[in-house]
Image (cartoon, rainbow, N blue to C red; front, top):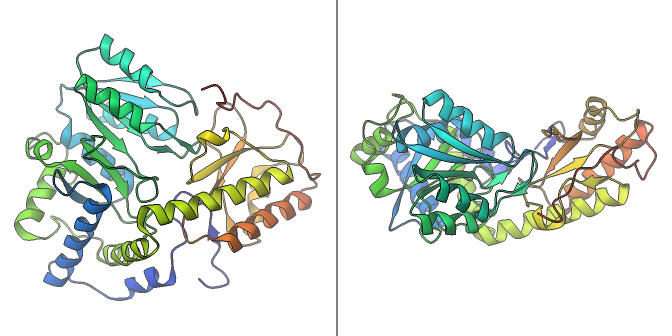
Length: 383
């Protein structure tokens, strides 16, 4: 970090360590044996974290996390197979858009901006629609910051004999998940989230037998997860040019993840960040969208105060001038903004961003504590 680099309080890309950045200072040959070794080690480590060593395979995919999600859906879901998509925010809706684009039929349970899809919701639809073959859910819906109850959803899928696919983009690496025990047919995530790498590739952890049976199903040449896996199995190489520097940085990030205590260690720090952040902003007068039991350790949505002096763009710029980047809200029911808890953030940075937000409020002419939001939505206390 230099003095000019702001801290990123976002759900990824995020603030990385100096050593992760330094790992990108070396050039790698994309077909070289040493680089292939890096790729292999990354995949082995990811399978261990996911608990899938005996049942699943790990396939990296170039591009953003959405590339990996589309590759997984397009490869694993046959063209005529019906999917149930659980939506409670922008990323569940994006899964629906992907399936629309692919021409794959699907049904949706749409809970709006932030209410969680519950096991009983899923059970009712599966009982009524036996043609459904798989269920897709977002683990942490970062448009609101809610951590969805994947365990109870997995229980229902197992009892009904349906496959479960989890978009764990912003949760995997900090929220415990065991793909074999849930069980989970596929889990998708990305390098630049809770492992604290940099953007450039995502990855899918998929049941070996399911992936092996998916040959020829994909809609795309470059996003064919089965073809990528088969080529890597035979050669150790990526099919097309890999993001070499990003892979090297990710391996360094995974080593640092392990040194911090793995999933448990990272979750402890992120929870501490969240609790410190929420307590600090509540003291200033800000209200969280969600009740405490639904707050994820990834990102928190705060409701905008009811004041003509509050304008998000000015608020954002004032905080940025103090060295921090936050996120705009993604709700349709209320004005809001989001503050992330992941990345290289510790007590010092959390306390500093709370102070920066307090100072920004005063700069905008807001009283502190800030005015309550105009109309706070139901905050899930009875969900």
